[in-house]
Length: 361
Ligand code: PMP
Image (tube, rainbow, N blue to C red; front, side, top):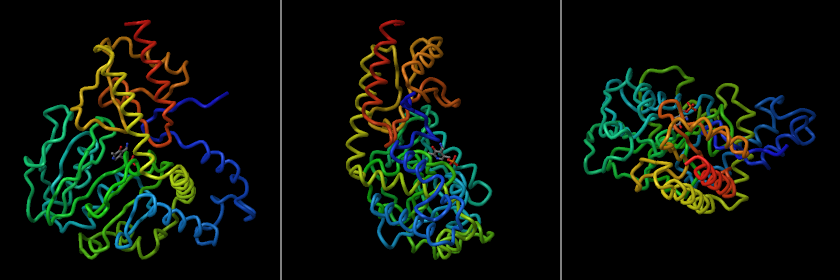
């Protein structure tokens, strides 16, 4: 049986060579006498895996030396809470720009700790756009400005980096990290759950300007302290070693494939093909996001006739296309087309969409 094209939003498809290598090393990692997941995280083998993953991620994303990289148990939601504890004084203002579901979730994580301000929101517009920077109400004394670089459910993506002046920009890059070149220096902090472009669920990555780690933040347990994690090389406690290992394999695969420039090119091609299939359907399929900020990673769409959705999904499955059911918040269909999704997978989906419309339209 062959593997299907998997459009799941996360956990998401992993590159086949990564799965094959993980399978080959499952029983014994090198000549260690055991799998990497059975070995001490303090042993030479795992230390090497961890250091290589960091070095490769730095090269892939272009992370300067004056930025720290943390690998942490707890996904993106955990970081959403920890950023307030680590970088905002108790009750200090923080500015949030809300452009979808995950931005709204981020608000809930910090509300107990800060003076939460919504600098801009596209909620009244059904999260189909990004409010222009000129309309944001930013506070000069904010600890940071938070954005969601790509909204995984609503399919809305920032296509430029907003200027926030002297206040550092913090960005949730969970569903778009490593999909195109970015200038890390424009951000104070970037965080991502790994389970989309970086590989496995169960580990989160934080990329942070080291200067910001001098901030006092709020009273917190050591395990919630980024500085303590950095001092311990992300091994303050037992790290999610299997996930870290898989992340390392995935990052290495992306470098081997040509890095973020190559994935930006592929992402453009994939997104263009999919939006063309939707926009060219005469309304049979519909994506409602402002064309200027449509996501290159997550493409939500609706059928003109919602009653056909189940048939669409069942037929897709028969055609070897899985993971297309929309998130429960929005309904409809969603195709997540992260770096591990080949262009051929999107072409197969577009062909299926045309075929389904011809039969049922
Ligand atoms: N932010 C974004 C943009 C996401 O897509 C997700 C998960 N889909 C999250 C945050 C939450 O991530 P986690 O489940 O790793 O906490």
